[in-house]
Length: 514
Image (cartoon, rainbow, N blue to C red; front, side, top):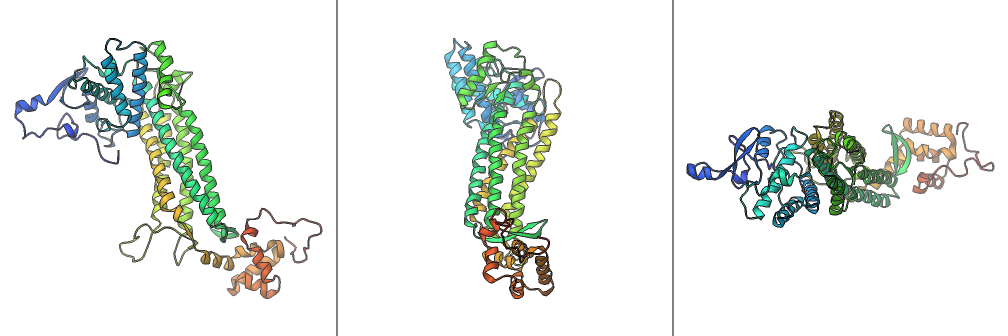
């Protein structure tokens, strides 16, 4: 899905899929009646567009849940197709449809089409829905049944031939297939996200090498502190991405434990024992992902804390992004009245009234993604904590937030890498100017001059408006070569101060409070 609203629109009831909607003036009454089929459920009957792949359960969900006005995430629909395929293949191996091979073939092909994204337009229920995901499961069941009927040369709705419940949902429940599909969709999305985090990490590592020679003022509490290099700052961002990459890689393990086969509450009601034992193996073989059946299916059905854990990892990554983007904006601020230590790639004009203004739009956009992901994390935690007894009815909200967070973070990492970090430039002149005029340069002199003399230099610099370097040279406390040596990239990046505690070291220039 690319942001379009695939929900069927309707001017009345029932709500219909747009590609099957009927223009009332174009047909006679009789022809319009023939354009619908009648389907039944325990609440009664509804007319369904004759060619529609969804059925009455989907139609009721469309009427009941006009909330997000967006269908379930495509990744969830694709994962559901794979889960249904694993179930169909397992049922077939256990003897289902043994006397009707064409039917079994059609069901499996329909499942594959859904998993490959070919049936996305027909998965139309709103991503926010009551019923713990039942509407999504039934939308999938109806679409797969009717697509299988098409493949068999039968019209949609001929459920005596292929039934959404008796065939597609055989030995299953929403309560085991929905969370399993969500786990699969999340694993796929996590792997994509990991790739983008790696790319971003490598972009920062490249920037670390490019800027290794650029000495600049390091700041604490936004005040000048000590000297560092721009390369070291970029290297710290790369390390943050490395930690996020590792967390994302590891948290996939939590999602591989599934409750498939547990049916309604994890007891496997209405499912053969062999199906329960084999269906997860089939899913693992289909996906190449190391899925395992939960040892306690009841626990895995009623408790959703794993999604909180995964969301927490995504929040940690969002925190890293928000901090880094804030730093990039600050270092690029100005350009004349700000820090202007770096130049961000110019992406678009920044103002409709201020000529020449270029804003840091990429870090701003990524920051908004990070903030939204943090909000999603809070929502996921509340939804997972709100489960009751044997089931959590709020998994559709968890799915909506978790999968959107994964998608948003992957896109944010991608644009931050391609449109910002890869094109970063250092303003070396500005950085050097800051070094010479900042009290941070005085701090670099501590090993040579001691605390008292450095304090005096800082005071005189503030009062006279002269640089630390000029004053140190004028006082004769340091030579030009000695001063410059203390602010080289090697000196400011050195771990500790060499020879500071050697008994034979010359401390004649040091003050009383070194």
